[in-house]
Image 1 (cartoon, helix red, strand yellow):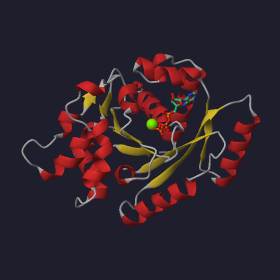
Image 2 (spheres, helix red, strand yellow):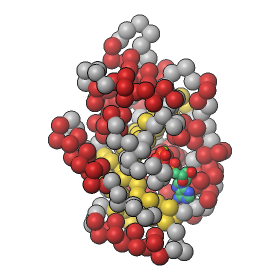
Image 3 (cartoon, helix red, strand yellow):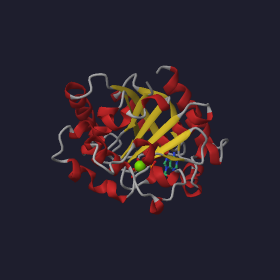
Length: 260
Ligand code: ATP
Ligand code: MG
């Protein structure tokens, strides 16, 4: 059974995709077989892994809307997954169609567990599955929480960092209570930390106080290499393995998986 992580924060631009892709690449470089699921219509995980969205016939949308009905032409897991430039790393891509997924599933039976069901077909093939989610607590994010064993919450070291987190934790608790009792919070990752400002330090102190014992020691610095990497279609740990951002993601990888 692969470990499955959902990377979640309904606040936009906090580092979910950057964290998902770099952690996935660290694991793949260590020889684990890794699957990234792009759970966001923006498709940043898809393009960040160098996959051209315009040439895809099928994506997560097809997997979640047709697989369970077993109709002729239903998407098969193996038809939707694509390889990436990183050895050992595969992707369930997202095209713009994913924007219609919440609507398409709204009246479906078992709508909250479509992703969990779809990933059953993948269980034997991977050691680790990372689900990158959209800045939303909509149905697709619920599906991601229902399919995961652990939740990773990136928090940006900025004003209003804690805004919305109580709502996020409430949703996690509801999913635990009603759909996925095994779901655990792996922890909070502080991202885009800027040593030159007092603000980052203040936010760090506040987050550590609010989530005592649940915040990873490793803090991801603000680092331009992390922001540049997606335009080269590879995660930063491959694009420049030695920059401060990549080294931080290696430390985070070790910290997250040491206690898994
Ligand atoms: P969304 O909610 O839109 O999906 P997200 O939470 O996935 O956003 P990212 O896309 O990972 O956030 O990051 C937002 C932007 O900040 C991107 O342009 C990314 O390249 C950049 N970025 C992420 N982490 C860092 C960092 N540590 N240092 C500098 N830039 C970063
Ligand atoms: Mg993202």
